[in-house]
Length: 163
Image (cartoon, rainbow, N blue to C red; front, side):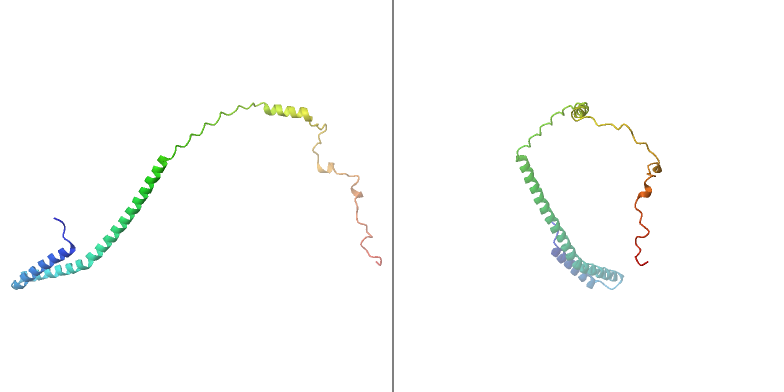
């Protein structure tokens, strides 16, 4: 048996409420009638709340469902695109293998010294200085004999003729 729609539920509740209302009218005054009256008031309040809350909740659920369906469509499109890409990759010719690099050539470690000897033989060896200058104090290198011969300004220069 399928679940009733909201409209069917409302119709069934109204029929039930009408039967309870008839019973309430026919009941004699007393504590039982008061309890039944309170229960009917609570049912009426709850039904009014259902009439306002249910459509809002239903609209929210439909919006969420539409969002999920939209995301599902996007994901399905993405899956289809990936399947097409995978099919294209599978149909593409295989990538040729790169040949292995050749083995490195061994280098003679004596080549550097041979080249040095050959260049020295062809262009000559550098001359070595026979005397290496000694490290001395600075005043030992000073030319004490000629230091006064440097130009000194004359005392007469810079003065005028009238002075």
